[in-house]
Image (cartoon, rainbow, N blue to C red; front, side):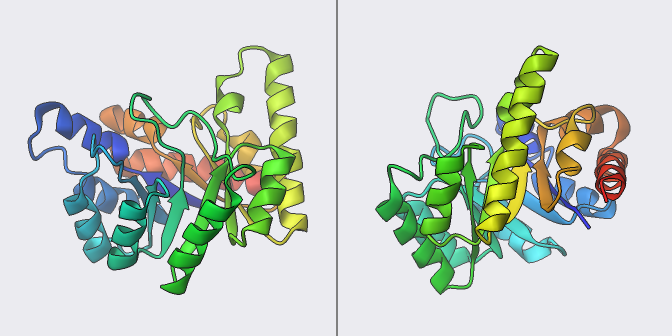
Length: 244
């Protein structure tokens, strides 16, 4: 059954706007689990713009499902992950001035560095995923560096403005997911998914997990976290079941 990882970064963004104590992403994570989340995702950025180390440490103490730590593959972050030992780490590209992650890792041109990162995390029993564009060469490179999981970047699909663009980007994701599974990789996806576009991605054969944050937090402003998570998970599972 397809799983939902809820990203609590945007709760921390609201908190950091006032540099105060609330809203607390740790409490948001607990509410998300009450709504049926299968895991909690948080991106600890190098500039600490939203999620803080305190948040990660408390999430690891309190989350009942699993914690997926998103991070850049810098030595500082790798060492911290090896100290904290979340069950999962997703390696993502990171640029200081971007509002949100703008694309996938370039595994193709950085094989040695990324393979070393995968090896370091795997040695302490952290399951590693690589956040990559739905590009077949990047998928092959991800398999070569021995990551067990790829998370397909769905941002261009989510941003598509015309039916033609939408179909083109969706086809890329289908093809990337199929190739990844042929190469023995577990397939996740995320970025820009919301209550209107999630079902097409959830229906992709073999899709095991979606990581979604902004849309759920935005809905939670009006409906509450538990209800927002429950509705997102219902849509995902409905689509996955319908696809066979």
